[in-house]
Amino acid sequence: MIKISTVVEQILSNDEVGSTALARGVLNLSAYAKRIRKEVETRTKKSVKPGAIVTALSRMSPGIKNMPRRIPDVSTKDISLKTEIVELSYERTAETISKLGMVQKVIERKAPPSFMTTTVGVKEITVLVSAEFVEDIETIFSLTKPRLKLKDLVAITIHLADNAISTPNITYALLRRIALKNINLVEIVSTYTELTFIVARKDSAAVIELFR
Image (tube, rainbow, N blue to C red):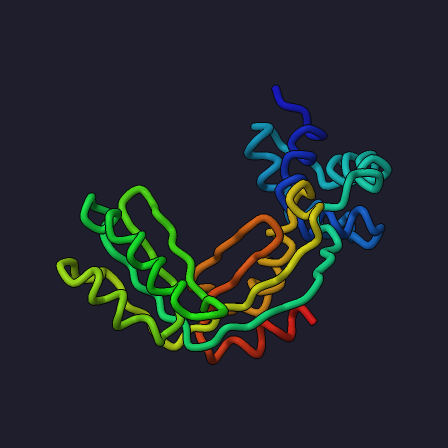
């Protein structure tokens, strides 16, 4: 039989808001106990009084305060913006794979190079590129019709500190800000110290404001 304390801990570990509130000492234990009571009873397969849940939460409080923060402070060096981005997505085939080198050469003709990323997935290839090169790329892939062509996008790149790659939940901390504003993310692209959000132009100002 599963202990009440074990179930409460499992529920809380999957509840960011609840665990954060408990760690800060602002969680209403009685109200929270009533809210999760049915789930606790389902998992323990027995009737559970709210007081037993409150007791479990109280015992967890000291330990959770000493746990590492789930949402780290993110140190950003700066933010850069690229407008007029287009997304082109193709089926991955031997033909389309062979064309990627030609795509890269087109971009390298301009100094400094314009924005472009390519992602080779299991079944698809996606190219995110400055609008000025779309015609060239479509010519290169002329034998293959794109599965998607999406215009009027913006690339917002967050430049991070070198230690970001070894810090848990960095990506989550940044994505969380966008999610809380209910902003649609079209794509996410990353490198060692850069995280780039591709969004519709209409959403770009709101996203930039989140990281200032």
